[in-house]
Amino acid sequence: MTRNQRRQLHKLAERVDRVVESDHRFFERFPDRQHRVRLASQAEIETNAIIEGDKITVAPDRQVYVVVKSIAPRTNLRLIIVGPRDADTDLPEDLAQALYFRAWGVAR
Image (cartoon, rainbow, N blue to C red; front, side, top):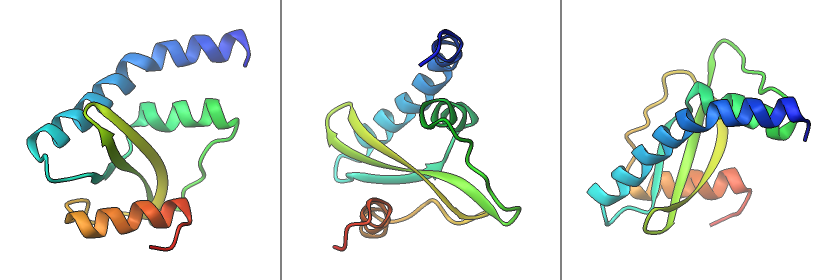
């Protein structure tokens, strides 16, 4: 990773941390949940582009989402996915879980 990329990631870190904190609060409010789907923040999209070395190309009728899995208190895994624009993100646990495993390419 180049010095410039590290600098860019550092600039994005605070914005990404705020979004990650919202995931923590979600799972604290809903302790029976382990999965969540939400819109990806611009900071997450930019961070992903730096790390992956490639921007996500999204068609006009598509949008970038994040599927979050809580694995322990305040410890989450996040997957960036592309889906239909304006898709409902207020999914019940079973559908959010299915989407998480689908994003990993795991049949469940």
